[in-house]
Length: 388
Image 1 (cartoon, one colour):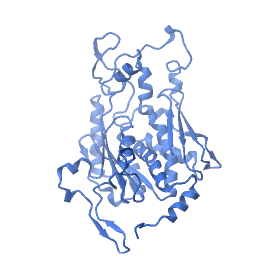
Image 2 (image 1 turned 30 degrees about the vertical axis):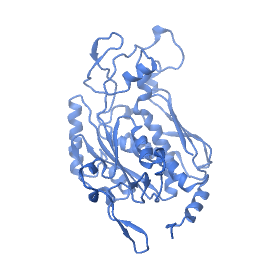
Image 3 (image 1 turned 30 degrees about the horizontal axis):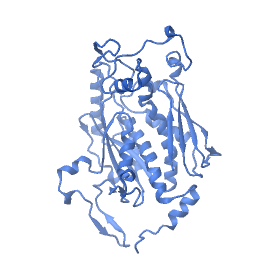
């Protein structure tokens, strides 16, 4: 069983990730992890933090001679910005007069207010440091390890941006493999496959920046190569849709998740929504459409998995919104932290990572095995049509 934990604050010394349950025999290197971390740092509309950080995940345990051992993996990403925040984020106790001025004006839309109430904090710095999306860097590192596992069994995952603000892309990614999608998307400043929409998206980001505002959007994650029957329809918490939706919504600022046609299914008759089945020449089942997004009844259909995720505009604004000062009870303006204008392209890369982390357990439940050799043997022994 795969389990993972992350630790660390946005401006603390480092981020730590622990990944337990990865089968033995998966080849992995720090350079391969760094490639995905670099992709996460790109994107038009990112803030100044990305010019400071050069994320690199150091593997601390679980790997020997470039291959996983089956024991827990631990990775560490140093925060370079820690040097500028030593006094503010020091671990050691200090005299009260040496502490930084408490932050007491929560940002609407952020975890500031609810977190301060929940944990009884007078300084919302104690809330915002951990609720920051900076934490997703270490999830991308752990997801990169899962990517190497899935490559061993023929499963690939990619992503691209389909909307920023009101601008929607017209490109059709269904004809492309996830590797092709990533190659094209990574070459775009906004990770969009539609060049005309790319230009308009950048203009919307520029407009938001000039207004001291932020802008959100929608990205799509595609996973190809999943066998039929990953997930389960017998219990709600084992449904693939439930597992993936929970994973996507665990990313900060994500507000909705859909599969295939997503919310568009509500406007059509069933005959226009469901994917008809046809007999292949070898007796297999063939689909000519994938409106379901590769999932039926909480299980994979064998078609590409297509997940759409909507991200809200970030809640840290250069022109802050009205709020209440928690120290005085008086109306005020929200605090202003360094932030991105738009992080949808980066969120798409994070979406790939959490998709892969979420797929690990249902896939291993289907295939079984504590090592790659055992998993390959189980896959080879599985009949393609068990009812024959």
